[in-house]
Image (cartoon, rainbow, N blue to C red):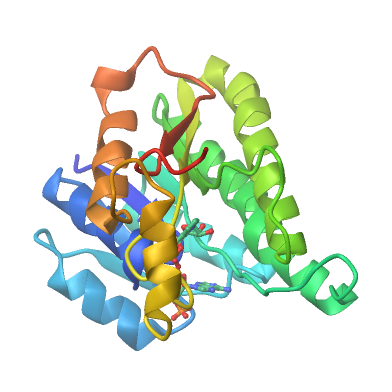
Length: 239
Ligand SMILES: NC(=O)c1ccc[n+]([C@@H]2O[C@H](COP(=O)([O-])OP(=O)(O)OC[C@H]3O[C@@H](n4cnc5c(N)ncnc54)[C@H](OP(=O)(O)O)[C@@H]3O)[C@@H](O)[C@H]2O)c1
């Protein structure tokens, strides 16, 4: 039976790169975004044609519908990549309750719900892999308050769910990434891009394929002894 992977927020940049790699690895990939037409176009463009689903990950009912679709139509799930995120540049003093709730719901609650629903399906056929996309937020980020807090939560969610899900043969890991592909503001502001580049040891920002290669490894059998890890794939940028 063919293996199935689902990537949350996979019509652009990092998520799209991960979906492309997982399709090359032989998975039937489920492409998701709030825009069904775009999701279908990406699903159709993959080396191995994928499935797609229009879903807003800030809405718990839509997340439940997505996993019902996966269970009914694809019957299994081997890999979940939690990638979707929302960012607004606000310090704690500017952050509105609306920003806080939307950010936490999109970036953290969706990771919890997707992990929970995915694990229900995975444990029925002997296990699987869950991979979370996060940032090296150990010391926080200024002026992105809710986003930074949400990613700290993702780090904690990764380690706690790795413990709870190991008995079901489900490995949970995370990749912490720095500026990659088309980071916010880099197109409009070349100085911003140069600053990002100078902050890395590699001398350039990451490509979505750099992240996708690490995902490909972590969900493979070659990584079978890796549980609850948060692997930096950031060109040495988290200094
Ligand atoms: N790129 C970077 O430099 C960078 C740096 C550090 C960490 N990261 C992390 O890497 C991950 C991907 O970032 P990215 O820059 O590649 O993102 P991106 O370019 O903004 O793409 C986001 C994707 O998610 C979808 N999406 C956004 N909100 C959604 C929602 N509420 N429901 C469903 N789909 C939604 C978008 O499609 P629609 O708009 O059509 O819904 C799109 O496919 C995130 O976890 C981010 O925190 C990225």
